[in-house]
Image 1 (cartoon, rainbow, N blue to C red):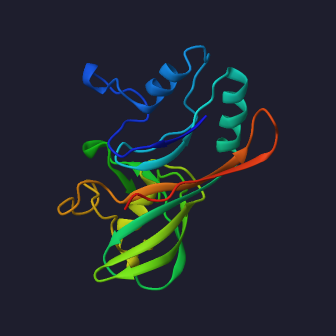
Image 2: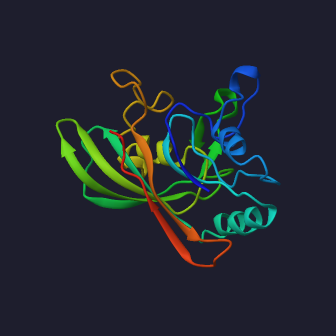
Length: 201
């Protein structure tokens, strides 16, 4: 089951009664007979776009394995706050949780897990840059940290517009990051399937 999650909606339940409405709960309500874990991967609450959910334990196992082995393809559309140098590149910066400031992540060459992101410029307008971002790995906040990290430190050099953790949240009602492309092997049919969602910004 593939959905187009809106920005502002949790992927899975959080702590507290006010954080129970989420994408997983809505999928479960649509398919009350679905068994086993539904969630295969997550999007940040402030990120919109494509997510796949499993409706059976068998599908969950097959889909989860594809994500673990990096057999899926994901692409994101983003607008960055600043003028990015160059037209394309790859960021290779390891990430580790910033414990005193959770849920923030940070670059850590000793404890960090490998994290790679490919990117290319798709548009330029005033002081903003449109980019397509392709995560090779799937670390928490990977695209956000890689975008915001200065160019001289190996990042793209411009935070995502509206990012309240790594950039300037002023001026936009949401973070301009959207999961626009998702492809994987269908766990039932065994065929390669592709889904596309235009960014709502």
